[in-house]
Amino acid sequence: MSDKDEVQYSTAQPVVERPSFWSRVGAHFKKWWWAHFIVFAIVVLVITLPLVYVGYPKIAQHDVNKSTLNITNLAFSDPTPTSIHINQTQVLGNKAIYHPTIYAFNATIALVGATAPLAVVPVPRTETNDGAVIVVDSNLDLNNTEAVTNFSMAVLGLEEFQLNIYGRPVLKEGPLPKHTVTYNKTVTMKGLNGLKGFELQDIKISLTPGADGTNMNGTVFIPNPSAITVSMGNVTLDVSVNNTQIGQSYLNDLTLRPGPNTIPLRSTINQTQVIGLVSGKNAPFPSGIIPLSILGNSSVYNGVEIPYYSRALAMNPLETTMNVTQVLINSGLGALAGVL
Ligand SMILES: *[C@@H]1O[C@H](CO)[C@@H](O)[C@H](O)[C@H]1NC(C)=O
Ligand SMILES: *[C@@H]1O[C@H](CO)[C@@H](O)[C@H](O)[C@H]1NC(C)=O
Ligand SMILES: *[C@@H]1O[C@H](CO)[C@@H](O)[C@H](O)[C@H]1NC(C)=O
Ligand SMILES: *[C@@H]1O[C@H](CO)[C@@H](O)[C@H](O)[C@H]1NC(C)=O
Ligand SMILES: *[C@@H]1O[C@H](CO)[C@@H](O)[C@H](O)[C@H]1NC(C)=O
Ligand SMILES: *[C@@H]1O[C@H](CO)[C@@H](O)[C@H](O)[C@H]1NC(C)=O
Ligand SMILES: *[C@@H]1O[C@H](CO)[C@@H](O)[C@H](O)[C@H]1NC(C)=O
Ligand SMILES: *[C@@H]1O[C@H](CO)[C@@H](O)[C@H](O)[C@H]1NC(C)=O
Ligand SMILES: *[C@@H]1O[C@H](CO)[C@@H](O)[C@H](O)[C@H]1NC(C)=O
Ligand SMILES: *[C@@H]1O[C@H](CO)[C@@H](O)[C@H](O)[C@H]1NC(C)=O
Ligand SMILES: *[C@@H]1O[C@H](CO)[C@@H](O)[C@H](O)[C@H]1NC(C)=O
Ligand SMILES: *[C@@H]1O[C@H](CO)[C@@H](O)[C@H](O)[C@H]1NC(C)=O
Image 1 (tube, protein in one colour):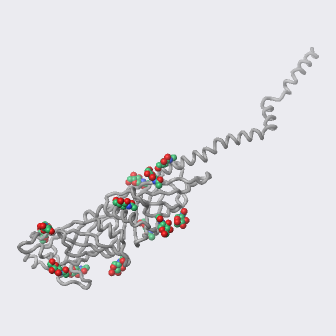
Image 2 (spheres, rainbow, N blue to C red; image 1 turned 180 degrees about the vertical axis):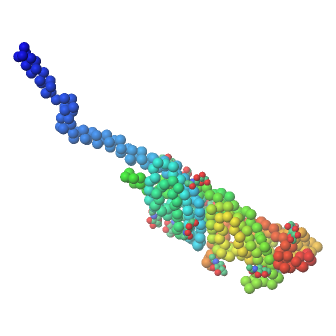
Image 3 (tube, rainbow, N blue to C red; image 1 turned 90 degrees about the vertical axis):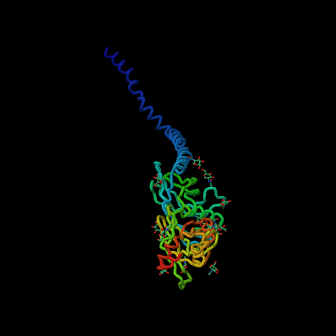
């Protein structure tokens, strides 16, 4: 029995000694690890390469498309016929989970619908967090006078205009490779709306011209509903009544800032003509209220005419009225007002 037992025992022995499933697996891997590693590496690459080189660029472009841009401040200064300085502050909106770095790039800006771009703007490197503030403070070359004139007319004359910003920046997210995306945004901005609300205030005349030849002064009130600041230099305006020019007004160092603007005004007015308009038997405006048409004549900055501002001002007629009786009273010439 014991022999049999032994035999039985010994027959069971090989079963016990046979390598377990796991040890067989272990042995297999010891021998074939490199083949498994290659398969694993291929699987990883097959999954990650499309993600990195196809999926990620798509996500990156999608996020760039979805981002928003608000121009909160745009100041034009130091104009010359072929260049201008801009100081532009914009706020980036990015609700995506990725906040890649966008490297500095040159963006082309154009009025939507224009046949030629306005300028090339150097956009600095940006970390694209939601609410990131991007400041562009730079001199721009203005090569296309027609494009700049159209742009100036839109800024001055329209309630709203659309600006397109286009570029091909390189972006980088964490350890992922650099990738070039298309940045193509159209931003709607408020314009100066034709200087609507323009008013003459506290107008005074003197019967003898001052040292600079002017014989009328006062202030002009110009509301600016936009976020745009524009420095137009020394502006000359032609003043007419019923299509007959009666004089010129000068706004020195005119800078229109966002919000209400109160600007000193000096004018040379033909007083003989004005008196003829309001007094006498055939006076066309016996009430003493004369309708004025004011039209841009020129914008001169540092002694150089700025054609795009001159054109834009000339295309934007301003209509207002002047109470001649009130002007005479303002000027201490109330006695004359009684005569009218
Ligand atoms: C991004 O927008 C452009 C149009 O501006 C479109 O052609 C492109 O398919 C968009 N890409 C993605 C990934 O959404
Ligand atoms: C640009 O505009 C910003 C915001 O208005 C202002 O803080 C900054 O001083 C301006 N820079 C220059 C050079 O005028
Ligand atoms: C941009 O302006 C719009 C409308 O004024 C506003 O709803 C949005 O929150 C602004 N986005 C950013 C990033 O400031
Ligand atoms: C932008 O353009 C200017 C002039 O063409 C060039 O010198 C500059 O390197 C460009 N910047 C970038 C970031 O490409
Ligand atoms: C400027 O505006 C005129 C009239 O709208 C248009 O015919 C012309 O193509 C515009 N020029 C540019 C450069 O966009
Ligand atoms: C404007 O002209 C200058 C020099 O002629 C050139 O370097 C620049 O690239 C031009 N810019 C545009 C927007 O055509
Ligand atoms: C930018 O996108 C608009 C429409 O989304 C398209 O009409 C325009 O051609 C694009 N600009 C460029 C330079 O591709
Ligand atoms: C404006 O004109 C009045 C009347 O001629 C004169 O008294 C006043 O000094 C002038 N004001 C300025 C700022 O020139
Ligand atoms: C002012 O107008 C009168 C009448 O139209 C004209 O005779 C006179 O020459 C004008 N004076 C000046 C300085 O233009
Ligand atoms: C305006 O001028 C025209 C001729 O140029 C004249 O017929 C008309 O009566 C004038 N209107 C007024 C209000 O003076
Ligand atoms: C405007 O004219 C005044 C006096 O002629 C001059 O001192 C000033 O520099 C001019 N301003 C500009 C921006 O050219
Ligand atoms: C013009 O001014 C006079 C004097 O201040 C005033 O009596 C008159 O009502 C004013 N006319 C108008 C239409 O405002």
